Image (tube, rainbow, N blue to C red; front, side, top):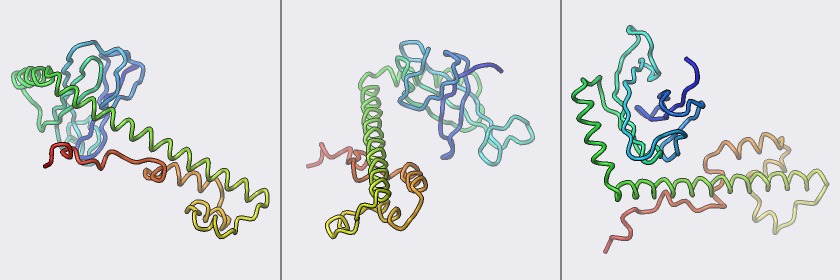
Length: 207
């Protein structure tokens, strides 16, 4: 099949990879909000028929196909801006009609701006979360080094602010196991960041 790129969408809460040779074919994996390398400017509407088996995975044999979906992908100035998943396999006329509708819909600059602002906020949240994970991991490393140096960690003041990871290290748990748990927990950076994801989107308009 050669090189390709992948656009990642969710169907029934499962992430599905849609492969395409339309862009730079550099094995890029793109999610909504990503800039797609090699994508043209303007508004691009693309579609694909996705066939899935009973487990929600790609099916390549007719006897294993249990569901078909039409997936429409919207790229605006090279940004993976939106996608929609529709049930069934569509005829040409229906596909052409929906492509035209999506072009008109995303020709609205206000709609595009609001969508991109959402991407920016989510990216800032993720950046802050990762920064929190790094800080928490550095704290684990610092505590482990102090333990290895034989430093007395039993002071009353330090006990008040001792993290879960510090307690695990004090109990003799392996440093790498503690670090792994920090990096794998999505909420690991919660003490160092304040998410906007819980923000009331209508707050500015309430009386």
